[in-house]
Amino acid sequence: MGNETELQTVVPQAVYLATGDLLATANSKPQDTEDETKWHKAKSWKGLIWDSFDKPKDERWLLFKLDLTLLTVACMGTFIRSVDQSNINNAFVSGMKEDLGLYGNELNTMGTCFQIGYAIGQIPTTMILTKLRPHYYLAGLELAWAALTFGASGVTKVGHLYLIRFLVGFLESGYFPAVMWICGGWYTRSEIAKRTVIIQVASTAGSMFSGYFQAAAYNGLNGHLGKPGWKWGFIIDGVISAPIGLLTFFIAPDVPSVARPNWVFSAEELDLSRRRKPLESYEKPDNFTKAKFKKYFTTWQFWLFSLLFICTGSCSNPSSSMAFWFKSYNVKGKPNVYSVAQINVYPTPIQAVQILFSLVCAWSSDTWLKGRRWPPVLLAAVIVFSVDISLGATVVHGNNRQRATRWALYYFTTLVTGTTGIIWAWVQEACLGDAGKRAFVGASMNMFSVVFQAWVPNVLFPTYDQPFVVKGNFGTAGFCAGAFTIASLIAFAQLRDARAKPTSDEEDLGTVTHGDSVSHQSEEDEK
Image (tube, rainbow, N blue to C red):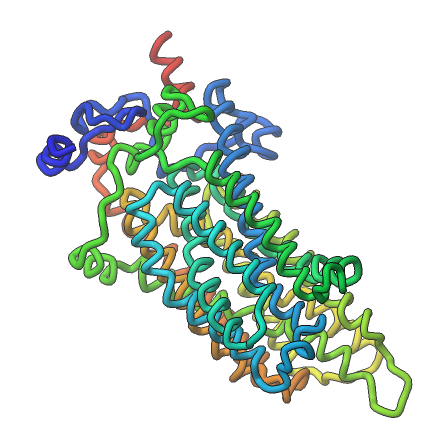
């Protein structure tokens, strides 16, 4: 190991074979690689539906394995992570409030503890990511928060919940950025947005289904073995989380630069994956240093993507008003206009509309938009800006026509949030070539978004004003305008950097800027 370290110092771009052994310098990089920074057009209608259909057999098999392992465990992990984030609220209204005597502001304090842990955990957990193999890292996070979820079922004091929620937030903070970072190490520009959005959709679905899990636990297990239903909700979440963590340990792939052959990926497949993504795949990720932090802080990617995520994270807040709007029609002393079930069910299409919009934008971005990420963000910002202005400028309780219009408007309030998966893909591409920078920028923008979401809703959408939150709707329109502006600046910065890049860089990397796949180009050379 000592000799290997010395060689790394002398030859920074040394090549690692699939065995993990140091073999040669950067001059030995394969010459049959395409330019991973460029978008490649689908060759058939099947390729428009799912890109791997257009690939040669060996590359198609590699992508199949990647989707079956990485995409599957990422979707399962983000789904249950989202369930775990919501379970405390479901438990609160399912008996925890009465059993623990939580009649003050304890629920909000629990939420604050989670957000503090989530915010301060972003950078430290990302630094750990560069020191551990990613599949160890992801599995460790999942198993740890599963253990804490089990622990929540046995609490007897609210102070225990405060500590558990802080630790869960700290652990969960590193999961989603790590998943996006790993995807950025494997998938090319024509492939990544679909995958990141599918993972984001899994997170949205987790929020939707969390209430159903708690309801099932309460209705079916309340009182079983002497435990109330809300405790069984935590137990069920833990029972689901732990096996997902174990599955992640056994099948989740590492990034190509540190991956070794195993029972899933052969040495040849890992070599192919490195040729598909050559800019980072031939160097092990460096440790974070003060010099690197200083370098990252001075890049436009750090500042603009952080600002963009602050804006996009604050663009969905008007959606919280819909349930309050239905409830506001019920006047004490008169028959209810909307039942409790209707108040809970009618807002759920908000997530369905967001999911559909996300998927359409992802496929469009990867196909006919030629890998451009900014058009869906700008489109969503314009739509939600118009929606927010309309919500702020119209009466809350109008005639039947005005009520129907407002009802429909609420369903489009989260479209900007629906583009976050595309933004994650955008970050991976904008920071391509520096794995540490990709990890740092992703964690930073996530952290800033969480910090702002800890106070923006309380200022713009206070519960006592709902649903009469005119300033909140207009303020959110401002965030949409900010998202539009910043996304435009990012697109301009990328274009500027692309024009400034010497064309000789492509030759130095041994890239081929034409052709649709790595292995296909190899076959052409052999012929």
